[in-house]
Image 1 (spheres, rainbow, N blue to C red):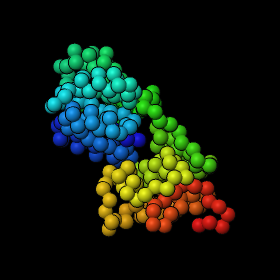
Image 2: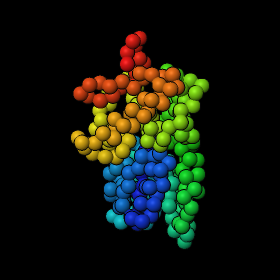
Image 3: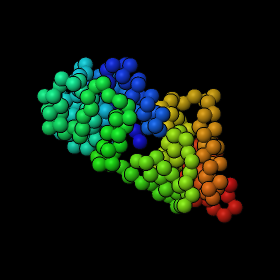
Image 4: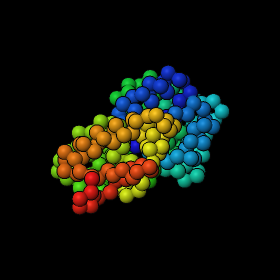
Length: 228
């Protein structure tokens, strides 16, 4: 799942970003209202964590604009303790919940999970392909009845493949979507993680599900008899 964090305080933004990444989320960070609006228009996010007090355009303006345009992405507002009136206006404008600063990270995660369970942006909470199942809310994956013990990065890789089954996915796309990195021709990070994911799928009885398309990338598809 991809989260947009809108926070102009660099320490707070870095704290939230690191914590979410460790939980297996892909994260984009905007540090002012104009950048946040641009990113929200370009990308489909599963949720937005939105500070109300921002330069260039405040959080209330962002909520109002996104809802006016029909975007249903869940929005969790981050507010100061003395901004009750702003909270009320934000909720009336279409925000889904709020959290006052300072906050504990485990509470932020709980609020975020609750928003994701309610839905909002067009997305499936449970992905399936053949015997593979992936629960995006509980961060659990299985091959048939056998659970897959995946690292957060392996989970994100499998999630991306299952969102695009039988499509050829380039290494550059995986770096951008899963690692938030631009293409580095010297990096073998994708191949290393693909290899680990393949091994775990093979051990669970799903050998050959992630196939290499030489010179292009990778594809999640049902293996044919005799394929590797």
